[in-house]
Image: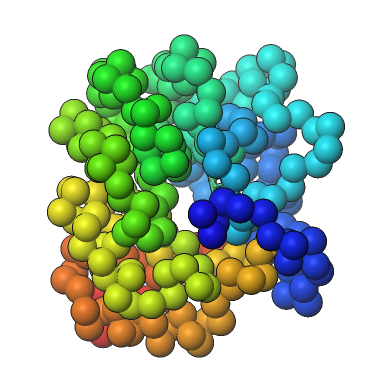
Length: 266
Ligand code: SF4
């Protein structure tokens, strides 16, 4: 609830606010496309989500702005991806599972055979587990390799329906990884992060990344200082096994992509 309910503090400017906190705007060759790396292309399929997380770094919704690509923008973004020479396409948003199955399957199919690996970055298995239907799972399985990167921040989010949704994906042989965001007042505690990671491992979901909070305007209340984050990560490292230890990363505003703050053995 803390991450979903609007808060008056969101409309207060903070000196640490960065309008484009991970440096995407200058690296957008086309609307709805971000290219930070030669081997990967990021496609934003929609701005819609099932739940709007109050800390999200893509907090750029403008009144009246389009929530979805137009038909011509959609065609152009997929044409760009196919001709990019990239090995992976990341389908993101918004939440790419906020679009219909038909549109999603068409999107994946249109990338093949040029793009061998498709990643779906979605919070739907956590916020709307009913979205992970048997049909969706079997169609994604049929389009392997499709990797699903989910986004859980706290063990309390791993409710029975969420566990079932994650199990449906894993049982079908779909690789599932988690990306958590370090959030003040929510999970800036090694006990909480350890429990989250250990539960994910039990669910056969790899705790891939712990993201340092991006300094998006409006999310200052959630930010943890880098020094506090590093100290917390050292405590977490001592608590969990190697497969339960996410890599702690920061995505700087210069657009150069993620930098590792902490990982693996000390
Ligand atoms: S689901 Fe993802 S894209 Fe949507 S608001 Fe939450 S963090 Fe942002």
